[in-house]
Length: 139
Image 1 (cartoon, rainbow, N blue to C red):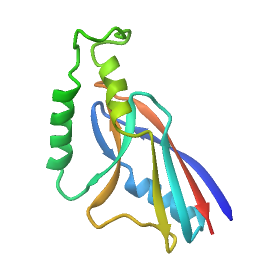
Image 2 (cartoon, helix red, strand yellow; image 1 turned 60 degrees about the vertical axis):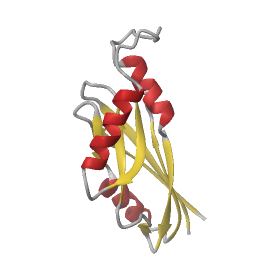
Image 3 (cartoon, one colour; image 1 turned 30 degrees about the horizontal axis):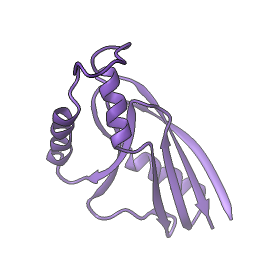
Image 4 (cartoon, helix red, strand yellow; image 1 turned 135 degrees about the vertical axis):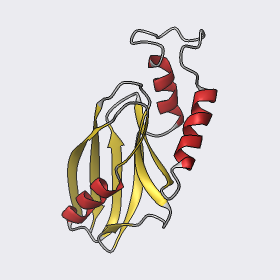
């Protein structure tokens, strides 16, 4: 069994989704692992990872509209507001989504569905540089 680990830096432009499929797929290819599992992890508490439809960007916009309704910025119920009105909502959004995703590796490639892409989901309004680690385990 082989283990391969690398990190990438993702520059977000503020709240929204950022396609990292190609960058992660390149690391999987670099690993030379033919069959296994790629675990992708974001090292932050106000950004997350999602597997989402990659053909129609309206899907990701609709997801953001739903999140805005479900977890509004500046809600008076939040005690933790040290970094502004989007601080605690970013943490809640992160808790509702995922900081780690396992993806199959088959034939030396990510084995995603035709309409699937991997996205960093930035939950803060300001631009950030996010660290994402990829660990590939297999043969």
